[in-house]
Amino acid sequence: MAALEQPVLALPSGLELRPWRPEDAGALAAAGQDPGIRQWNRFAVASPADAEGRIRRMHERWQAETAAIWAIAPAGGGEAQGLIGWGHLDLTEGAAEIVYWLLPAARGRGAAVEATRAASRWALDELGLHRLTLCHSVANPASCRVAAKAGYTLEGTMRSALLHADGWHDQHLHSLVADDR
Image 1 (cartoon, rainbow, N blue to C red):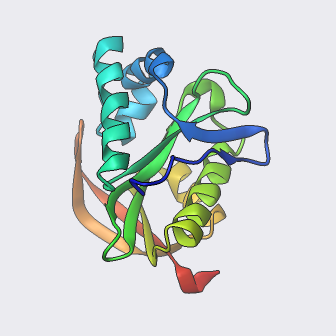
Image 2: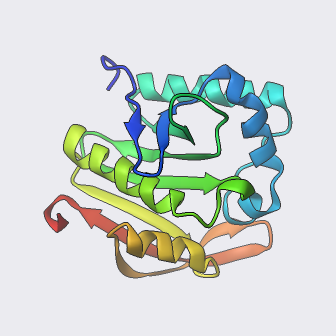
């Protein structure tokens, strides 16, 4: 990955997955304050300056081959509307875990499903990963729908697996493996 430029991935709806840019700091800062994003993600950004640092770290993590994080944005320009990417990326083991969120104005139109499908195809086809996982609180049915619509199989429930602001949550574990396609 480090030798490659992070690609831009087109989505059917006219959105695209593109690398985060310094000018996206305002959108990232807004996401860090959004109650819906904070409810389901351990994600907090205190200021635009904090967001700028996070964007720099996203690019550093690409170079270190430990993560691949994109902005979900209108194709050809426009403000970031969400985030999707691969954390816990292990090229040797061929595995990664997807993370995503959308700002309120982008929710409910299928963008998370489209983005998950595109990022998954890229991870399997371009990176050659074998196993992708998607985890979410069992109290978050929207993420469960995204996983199912994107072709991920529900494997089970991990008890008390992630600490959220309101306490420990059980999590659903979904997966997509190369042989599923």
